[in-house]
Image 1 (cartoon, rainbow, N blue to C red):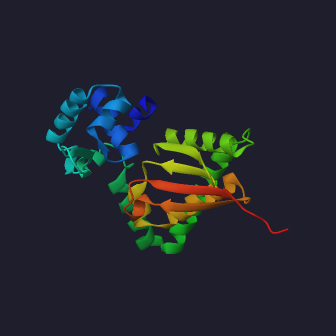
Image 2: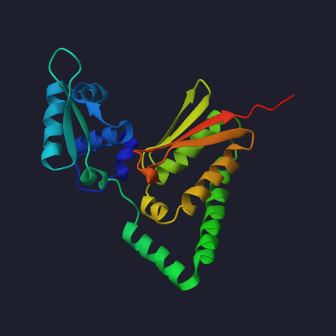
Length: 221
């Protein structure tokens, strides 16, 4: 988790970074879970979360679960989300609009395809020594994390799941869905045609993260 702190804007304390990253990568959590994950007391977690709430970075809601005191659930606010950079968002949107207005949709698509070819070539080089799916996903997560995607993967009963908790090009992707389509095609190319990739959660569509379910294709005999 500490390795991901570098993607936050400068100015936040290391302690606060850990809280924000936890809520970013794991979603809304109770005080007790936050305390357990960070190895501190419930009182310490509540104190820090309250300070973040006062700064407008997190909010809390009370959830009742039967008998007993309600549980406080903490989550990032829109202001808290801005602590995770969306690379040059305003400039990116302006450039996309200008390309469309000046050169047309086909020119923008050509630019996206050219960008993705370069990205795919760089990723393929990084994954050159990877043989198993575990090795490929590890290398892919590493390079994506270097670009700010806060990526992780895990094995499941049906294969694997690849998760990206942040999208540093979200503004561009929302403005032009072709960025996501090209990215999806690159994943398929890297992981091979023997696997099926299904995106079940998508930041651009309002989800907290992007989730890709990966399973081997079953061929008929």
